Amino acid sequence: MKLFDTLTQEHKKINKKSINIYSCGPTIYDYIHIGNARPIILMDTLIRFLESNDVKVNFLQNITDIDDKIIEKALVENKTEKEITDKYLAAFLENLNKLNIRMPDKLIPISEKINEMNFFISELVKAEAAYDVEGDVYFDIQKFAKEYGKLSNKKIDDLISGNRVEIDNKKMNPLDFNVWKKTNKGILFDSSFGKGRPGWHTECALLIDEYFKGQTIDIHSGGIDLQFPHHENERIQFIAKNNKELADIWMHNGHLTIDGEKMSKSLGNVMTLANFLNQYNSDILRWIFLSTYYRQPINISDDIIDQANKFIQKINNLSKKIKQIIITEQIDMTNILDENILKEFKKHMLDDLNTSRVLTLIEEIIKEINKLILTKEFEKFALKINSLNYILKTLGLSVNINTIISQDEKEIFWSWKRAVSEKDFEKADEIRKVLISKGVL
Ligand SMILES: Nc1ncnc2c1ncn2[C@@H]1O[C@H](COP(=O)(O)OP(=O)(O)OP(=O)(O)O)[C@@H](O)[C@H]1O
Ligand SMILES: [Zn+2]
Image (cartoon, rainbow, N blue to C red; front, side):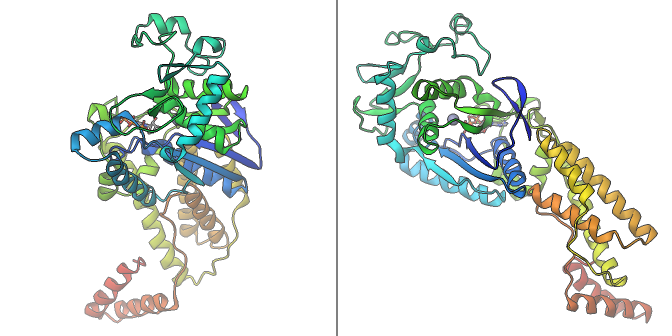
């Protein structure tokens, strides 16, 4: 498979039978929005495809349950941090469930790993990659000047003169970042450096290091906004600790925008995922993400929601039509798939997840099926329909062509036909309602 790697800025081949993946999880201080769902659905699409090809996936995701934003929210709402994180973690998990996500193999809240974090930071200090200033521990980026900035293609001098970094007299270099933060605001944790809490960038670096035992992972993913400084800082700590690359492939998704601006809690232009799923459904959101190359931005608009809706409608209508044909033509549905269609599907997915091309392939299959219906060539019917269902399922869409028809449904269908031919319209109307509720009409 070919995937674009942000670090080398080129497509890289990955053809392993077992793949380790890490994704930066949410900071649980608020409900997630539909933009946050993009990296989740991207990984879900990738993992479903890999697993359908018998690749073993080991997928780790963190939960950031220690963070300034959580502490702020707890203060504002006069609650404990735990009350805040419990509430939004439950909401997050419910959202994943509604999105029909293949769950990570491990979801780790960072608060469960404070001892390991302490050890990890001590190792960095021992290696002189980090330094302790009265209980604040900083990463020393000058020590890794050759590597630092490579992931985001930035130069240290440009970053400093860019003047975006806050001045802190305790740091040796203004770009040095907190791996452990001394503070007396909000929840505090014990460590050998004193009371405080871990830095966000260290949370992910530690989890990857610990869970994957210091080995370079295959894929690290997240939104493009995390490329700098978060991923740059994760990478440099992993290199400092293990003298190895953190990931073979860094996958970054483009932003979901609204009126051309990034959807973001801080800008207040969000649509929560829960609201979206109440109003529409997860298939609509999936189709929107699948319709565009994952590295490109997508603007959410009524128009794109409309297009997604039309797609789902098209499949549902086809499903009804096919049910009727299976009954009237007495077609015996086999389980066989069309090898050529599968080959083409695979080819597009192997090409850096070219899902928009796969959606075109689906449209082509629908056209072919409609043609077979017109010409009554039912030998190839099952082959095409089964392949279409296979693709829809592998993409994580729940809409499909339902070809399982009970004897009961068949009998009701024929009694409707009889009522119509006998011009018993009252009876036909009653039966029609039943057939509609069963998705046959
Ligand atoms: N508009 C967006 N489009 C696509 N991905 C996004 C968008 N906003 C955030 N993400 C991604 O969602 C994941 C979770 O991000 P995180 O919890 O840091 O969001 P956030 O910073 O709280 O969001 P916000 O930017 O709304 O404050 C990250 O991988 C991030 O890159
Ligand atoms: Zn991270």
